[in-house]
Image 1 (tube, rainbow, N blue to C red):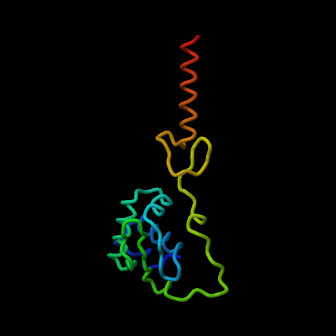
Image 2: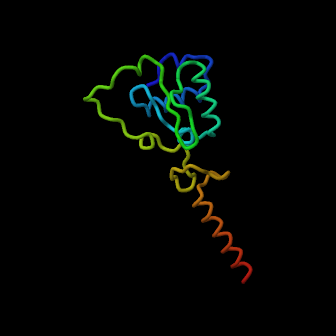
Length: 145
C-alpha cells in the first residue's frame, strides 16, 4: 500500500515511488530494514539510484532514517505516513519475506529463467557460456577438417 501523499508528490520521481512501495512491502509496523542492493536488484536499477531515491524520500519527509547505514549493516527506515502507524492485528497473516514476494525483474530471452544479470544479447550467463563453448567446438572442428 502506497499512501496518496507519496503518489501525488511532485518532488518525487517514479523510481522513488517504486522504492517506497518495496519498503512498504518489507515493513514491520512502520519500520523497514532492507538493503540497498536488494532493492536495486528487485527494481533492476543501480544501487546509487536507490540511494538517491531514499535521499529524496527522506527530504520529502515520507521516510525517516532511524539507524544510520554503517558498513556491513542495513539502514532502518521509518515510514512516516499515518497509515503505517497503526498496530497490525493479531489475526492477520504474517507476510512472506521480501525475496519471496518480489521476483527478479530480469529474465533470460533464451531459457526464460529469472536472473540478476543479462548480457547485451538478453541472455543469462549460463546461456552465454553455452554459446561460447559451441563456438570453440565449431572452430576446432573447422580447423581439423
